[in-house]
Image (cartoon, rainbow, N blue to C red; front, top):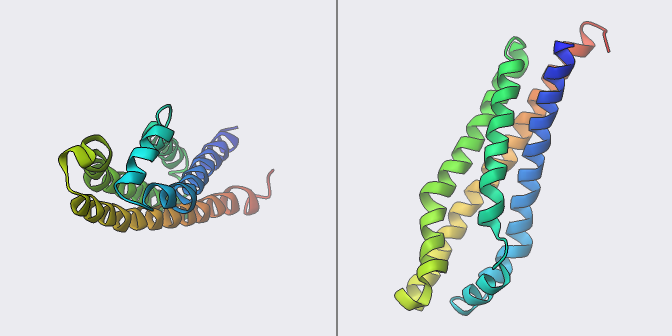
Length: 168
């Protein structure tokens, strides 16, 4: 029974990781081109569009879900050494992505969308957007690497728990 609960936990974390990755890729290729195409005018249009919900309302709770499911998966799968390190490495990518968001992205979001052109010049806003997008590509990389690491951890756990013992 414990083995099935652990497998469910590992799969849940993998699922959340994939949702995170898909979400950040959606932002990258569908949302951000619209936000950053004609700065600063596109910022105002984006704010009107995202008046009800935005990446800010979506990503922090999803990030917390990723951290929570990752911690649970790491604790429950701890005895499976081949999976343990992959899960922990995946968690480190979550921490790096979250840290990059909080340290670099959130202040730039405030500059671009809260203060905007009422406080800053168009050139400064364009520079801030360039910085934001550079750091964003690191976030994409952290998410992709974290998903690959977690998938490897899942495969290692599954192989150890189900293929060696022959139980299902």
